[in-house]
Amino acid sequence: MRLLVAEDDPKLLKTLVHIFETNNYVVDGVDNGNSAYDYAMSGEYDGLVLDIMMPYIDGITLIKKLRENGITTPALFLTARTETYQKIEGLDAGADDYLPKPFATGELLARVRAMLRRKDNFIPDILSFGGLTLNRSTYELVYGEKAQPLSGKEFQVMEMLMRQSGMILTAEQLITHIWGWDTDVDTSVIWVHISNIRKKLDLLNASIAIKFVRNAGYVLEEMK
Image 1 (tube, one colour):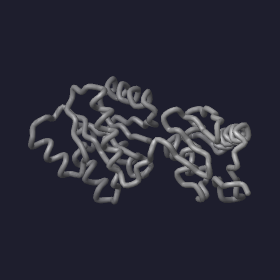
Image 2: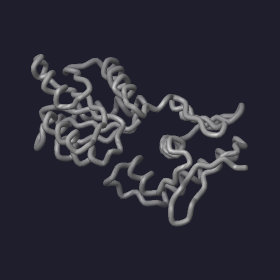
Image 3: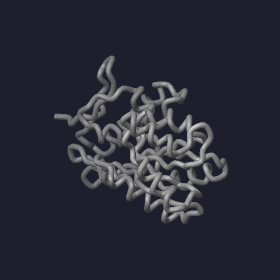
């Protein structure tokens, strides 16, 4: 799962990113409303964790603008504003939940999990394709009685391919989803990760292949 965290306190932002990354989320962190809007408009996120009092664009205005532009990504407000009317204002603006500061890490993670479960396209912990499974908790590919561990980036590549199995994904789509829209990573990095995944599929003797379609991209296929 990919999260966008927007928080103008640099220490808290660093803490939040660490908490979510430690719990196997892919995280982009920004410190102002303008950047949060630009990132969120990409539509590449499964959830948003937003401060309300941010520079340039406050959280309430931000979520209103996103909803007006068709971005339905679920959002949690994490803020020091704790009056009831302030909570109502945030929820009416389009947020899905509201957690006041200071917060307990366990409650934060539980609320984010609950928020993500409410998504129409919630992804279960196990993804399957043609007898191959991807365990999203252990980062393992499993086929029959064999298992192969994946690195973090290999996992993210494979997760995206399995979530959209049968669809051709461009290297640019993979890069944007995994590294973010403003990265300077080039397509050769995707090739390296896919090459490593193919080796692990061979070790599993899996009848699954990552096929390269010339001038198009990559697609997950069952071998006949």
